[in-house]
Image (cartoon, rainbow, N blue to C red; front, top):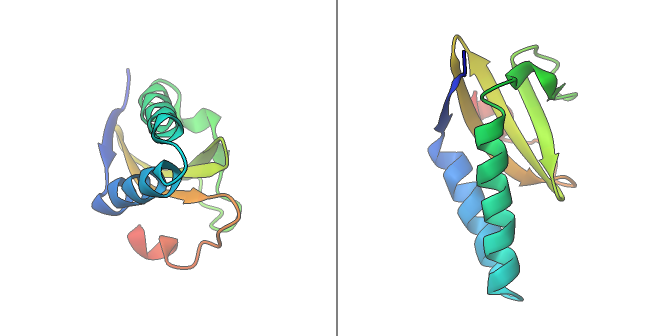
Length: 100
């Protein structure tokens, strides 16, 4: 059974900011990156536990996968996956734990 996918408002904002930043140089690449993020997020509904545990948090139900240079971080709860953050891979997870 596939899990349902929800996006937190913060994760939506993260993705919009990524698109705006990339669009400064290229609208094409901004759309391409956002499309890849959205398509990949849909695919995790089939096998959510296949992605790695976020090493900074070490919680079995908080996972991540990389899309280009970005970390898509999500939480698994019952049969729902909540996308909680999309951040650059070099960025620290300072305020991300507050989102859980």
